[in-house]
Image (cartoon, rainbow, N blue to C red):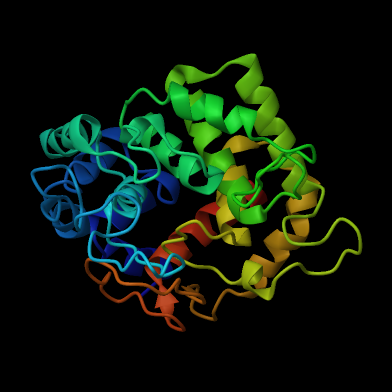
Length: 313
């Protein structure tokens, strides 16, 4: 069995993206498979976990049961990570099940930070980037988030959630989140000269560092950057960055070449890639057959479409 055949034996959330990005299926066939995401498999299961008040697991960024005395305890079952995961699954935003879920979020969900409506965002760029990408994907007004991101861009071109006065160095984690949000907003029709300029500056921050190295010394910043993960959450890795640049810079940039070859070298003999890093924390449910250290349909889908872009196949 080929890697593509194996991917096509998966959940509708994977299958429709394989059909679109790897097999060049007819648009009507892709749309028909995509329509299943909201009613079958992981997408339907995730939607069913939402409560009537719009929340997943009783909270916005973290679930309602988390002990607030443990501020750095990661959990991925609340509303914000659930919406990010739903966006990754890629349901049709016009599906009735999705419209109902997003309406509940828009009308009821508030951020813990200061009670802001969900689609107005909060203050941290790693959170706001994801929230803006969610707003763009699900057709919501994210203009408040855009303004917050633009005002928080640092002098070196990136973003950092830990910055308090505009003088910090940027973080790869925060920067990729902000870039994904700004790009999605532009693609959704909300672009402006200011948004484009901010996005391009942010891209340069990553590209000048070849997606994984310190500008000052050329050293690898963090070995974990080389390890593909899914879901990525707020964490950076080179596969996530390459999947972004596949869309944002289809003409390719040679500064991605080292990251491309690193990714290519990770391919297993039978054409799959491993899930190398799981970002630990409670989840609503496991994605079947997705385990750290084992071949992953999600990582393989993303790696194959990145290489297809780079190689011009």
